Length: 288
Image (cartoon, rainbow, N blue to C red):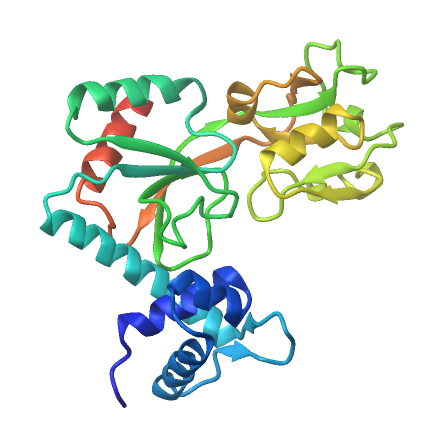
């Protein structure tokens, strides 16, 4: 079997991002026929179909999705290697979805700037379950759910409480705290869920006390706006409340909700030469 080349991987990545051969070809500054030939070569060399061509908006097959994850990691490794070879100090990218380390975020960033003045750090929000690690957009990440991805290593940092997010005109909004049952019994609001990222689930309540329904959101901004306008209530890790204030949302501690684990995550094969140093810095800040 002939070797798979980087141009093949870049073509697959561009197609996954753009969704059509036309848009992907424009992104890569090549003609559509040339891109189609490149994709066909890749499928021939891998030996399986990678792209479902049954509709105008192309989609990856399961095999294509699997290869894409590895391809993006390979491309990220290459970018890091080239940066090192050229002695370019590319920023280390810290990914997050809804929060970093809550009240410890600023101490961490200040400590890193002070102790590593020549190693810039870039804080990047990515609205997916790995906060950009799986796609190569970030080098390390802080997560509230551990991803089931063998390419990513995680370690539990600490556990934080959970808070209810309610509109400021909700009947419970003036309370100092609430119980899980008070959020659902006698209430008619659905629970706002962020699949794969958020810590909330209807399973936190017994069957007879579960929310009347659920509404899915795609990021923390959608979550906050939905709650502020009275379309749902939310349940999230305390770090979210510490990182995201909203004029129409009140956050209340939920005393009987299970704690949310905060995870430090990074690729099994680091994509930045300062990864180990940053992991150490995070552990030191968290441990006090």
